[in-house]
Image 1 (spheres, rainbow, N blue to C red):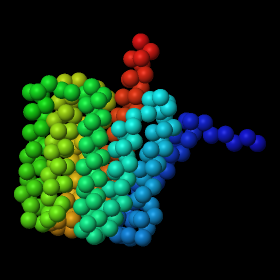
Image 2: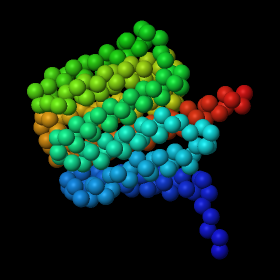
Image 3: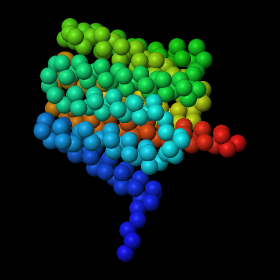
Length: 233
C-alpha cells in the first residue's frame, strides 16, 4: 500500500497540529507549568512556518514573513521565563517581529493616504498612552523597548485601519484583526508582568496570540496569491 500525503493533506494535518498545540499551550499557561511550556511553546511558530511553506510556491515565499515568525519564535521562548533579562529580550524580539510586519505591509504596497492613516492611529495612540502611564514605574530596563513596540503598533494600527476603511478587502480585514488582537494581547501580557498578575491572563494571551498569528498567515498567503494573479495578467 502506498501512503502518499499531498500538499492538501499535509496542510490539513499541520492546521490540526497547530490547533491542538494552541489548546495545549492555553492549558499549560493556566497551570503555569514551565517545563511543559519549554517543550511545547517553541513548536508553535515552526508549525506555522511549515504550514506557510506547504501553501506557498518556492518563488513566492515572503522572507519578511519568515523573519516575523523567527523573531516571534525567539520572543515566545524568552517569555516562558520569569527572569527580567529574558523578559526584556522577549520584548526586544517582539519589536523586531512587529517591525518586519510593518516592512512587509509597506513593501506589499499597503500605504494609505496621510489623513486616513492619522485618523487610524488615534485609537492606538490612546491605548498606548494609557498602558504606558499605568506601567511606567515598573518597566525599568524594558521601558525603551516597550516604547519602540508601542510606536510600531501605532503605525501598524494606522495602516491597517486606514486600509480597511478605504478598501475593506478580505486581506485588509485579516490584517486589521491581527493588529487589534495583537494589541490586546500585548496589553494583557504587560498588565500581567508589570501591574497585576491574574491566573487567567496568560491563557487568554496565548489563545489570542495563536489566533492572531494564524490570521496574519492567512493574510500573507492571500497577498502571495494576489501577486501571482497579477503576474499572470
